Image (cartoon, rainbow, N blue to C red; front, side, top):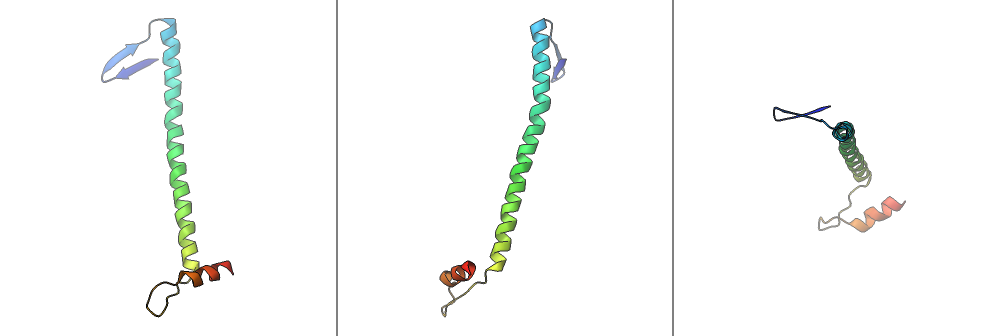
Amino acid sequence: MEAITIGCNIEAVTTGGKILSVIVGVLGLLIIPMFTVYVNNIVSVFHTVTTAAAEAAEEIPEKTDENGKKNLSEAKTMKKQ
């Protein structure tokens, strides 16, 4: 295998170098897709959590007292029922 960096060909000459170049090439082909799957998983979990939180917020009606402040104790008791 050849490593081409910035227009310069780097070729392995020794047996150890050839084995190392194959290992580095295979690791490069494996690490990039694994990183992509990792980032995709983070985005997917974030989307699931925010969607669930938005749906939960829509189900609980907001109660206000006579001053216009939110009354959280009534909303919590409604959620338990």
